[in-house]
Length: 457
Image (tube, rainbow, N blue to C red; front, side):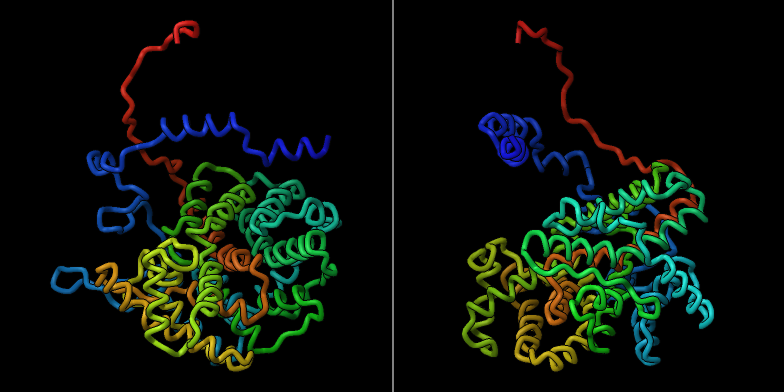
């Protein structure tokens, strides 16, 4: 009986296949109609620019400047609450501090914390870094999923049941909920992976408790690794990764989801679960996995990683749908907003070189650098795109996670562990500026028709 029930969930029957054809036939919309009715598909205009749908003070992205009344591409800039991300990273690196907690404070409260405020904030997060009694046993260890994003979303939704004020959307209560989720995301992600690794792969089960004196990045490595050991460089680079992923404007898919769902007046747990569902999508949060897998295929296909002509041939084969997944893409290259450069990738690259030397992977780093240099030229030639194409943060983040020996299953959850800071800031901003429920318009292109009684159809 159990196997029969299982099959009902995973089997696509002939009846379903026939119904799916009907579904496809009656849901197809001619792309020409979007242009005819002046619909900004994907909330982007004809030039690919995002349609303005809101205002925010949380972050800003700059990819162009106005010169004599015309938009001219420029080196990309990213600002958290008006502060250049390069200055933020440079500040805590010079002082040999971890920066994710500082960046989170800035995003949430709009001000850079004093030393005392930062210490108090880190203590607050440490106090919240504790799951309800038996949560790991009763929730995380039950029905472990192969996808950690689904596991994370399930855990977030289940936390609703442990919160006596779950539906209270007052700012103090939502702030408390957001701070708890920021503190708990590393535990929910790593423990979910440990459960899956144990039950599905037969590996030993490790559930380490976080340490209050450690930063978010340090605790991530501490609870993930069997021996809880890590180097200072490993922790600092992971910390930089969290800072760079913490926020990226209100227009990215998952953050816009946060605004949309928050505008309905629903609870924090439902809102963040929806944002996780968005981030899980391969067009959003899963790109760095594609980069790593593409390079693994490249390393097996290309015999000489230093040969520009051979590497170039592989990149052209990618664009011609003749290599890797035959999708016609060079993963990690290009961005919906940035053109000349992604500031996050530029910052990251400085640390990637150091980590590759520590790990003895300098040849791999040189291959990444070569692809970063060749790909824009080849894309311009093959696709006739001359506005500028550059490496994005996914290009190097996957390589960093690989060097840190992080499992692929945690790549996107690590993105979520960082981005929960930005989602929280945007949820609070939406609730502070209470307005109408977000409801864009859709135009129906179906002509009215008569209802036909059942026996006459």
